[in-house]
Length: 293
Image (tube, rainbow, N blue to C red; front, side, top):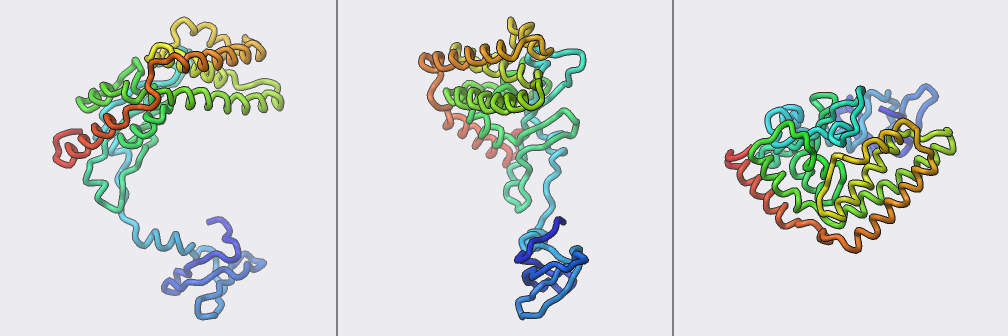
């Protein structure tokens, strides 16, 4: 536990949960606690808990095992990253992203299932279906790319239903999320460039790729994960063979393309939340009756 500031509300565990406030800290690092009855105790850090933490521990229940949920309840998983984009090299990882459905009865407990799980494999990350839908409806690129990856590694009938809904997640919100994210990241990269003399070219490559994907999405109404004809130029960026000035001109050109595409896109202004929400409700009902997942 890091040092508690003076004034912290604490519980002295070895005094049957006596409560008080830290009034001062001694030179040897012990805490002087003024109890509610006015008495003062000098105690070690390991004898104290923040009141909020003590109460949380007191009512804690066992949390569901996230890795078990991923193993037993994944409905869909796909490879993303360089291998899905067509930008892999000999050293590229195989990054997998998945969606699992926590049994409905878990939500009836104080110990709620996790909304995402990192692992059990180092390169595997998963979202619980509700969190996945929420982020995908906001046009989060990471989530949309999972549904559109050409490299599917696991898919149940329920996963097929989710993929069948992927157009319901697409909307003009993509303009904001893709363009806004890239612009903010380029500002950080420019600061690093001025400080270090060179950007992280791999990151730069993927930001340009995001703008290309967004342009295609707005122009054609389809999200293409594989970069296709842009592969060699993007890999040249990754190798640092394209000057910063040329990369910056490419970025500005792509941002202008997005502005143009937004004015003529066939995508709806907002995603079809009602359809996605209706499907999620049906998933929860079927899970409660053990007819899915």
